[in-house]
Amino acid sequence: MPRLSLALSLLPALVIAGTAATASAAAPADPENRVHRRFRFHIDTDAVGWTRGRSFLPADAPDGAPITKIDNVGLGFARPLQGDKPVAGTDPILGTIGTSMFGLGLGYGITPYLILGARVGLAFDRTTSPSDSPFKQSNNFFSTVFTPYLEILPLPRGRILPFILVRSGLSAVTFGDRSRGSEGPIEVNTLDRFSLLGPTVGVGGGAHFLITDYFSIDASLMFDYRWYFAKSLTKDKIAGTSVSGDWERQWQSFTLGAVLGFSVWFGGGGT
Image 1 (cartoon, helix red, strand yellow):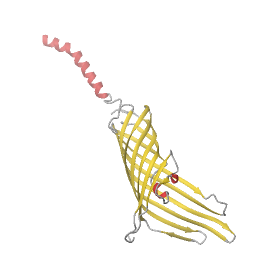
Image 2 (cartoon, one colour):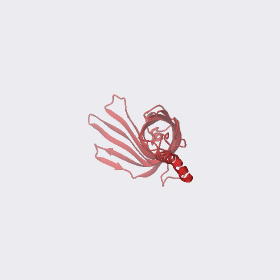
Image 3 (cartoon, helix red, strand yellow):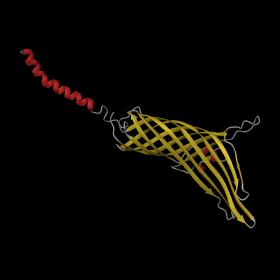
Image 4 (spheres, helix red, strand yellow):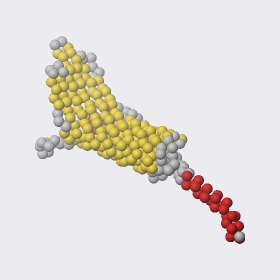
């Protein structure tokens, strides 16, 4: 009987302990985690960027043939990249290929410490010759880059979330020079277009500064490297001629950029 009485007296305590253990197991183990099972929509821009480009020599190039090199520096939010200042003087467009005026991305917290996502970067510009001549010239530039990424967050709690980011994807660029006009018997309508396509890899680090649980200011330093294959096209609509080259290894460049942006966070948390 004493043993039975002791067991009955301990029963409420065992029930309470079991209930607490069950509730603890059912509750999120990490309710303050800012990343896990949350979506992140983000917009960013290169606030400061330095791009260095270098051409590949063709296979039949003679010994001692010159290699084209260029450095470009740019400053400003969502700036047209053709305006980036060339440090070493040649066509500045060659130094800007692969970079972006701004980027849009979407990520998802697959674990408390990892965000898997993808980013699309865009850049475009158009210039025309300010001339009273009947013959007008225009230059068009468009660039895009698609890079899936993995973001590693060693400290996924609190209001400041430092991260390391690795990404890899594909860049595509096209820019053309069009001339058209007529005067008397002379008529001109020509197009010279240069297209590039190539892989890109990048690595960087920064931090998300959470203003609220759903909005953050993002700052990072990114390094991206690209290898391009290029193809040229020349058209003369008046003469009815079109000459297209083959894809050839043409250009490589890297960009070191200070990136600023913001993110909107939504979805559930927990583990």
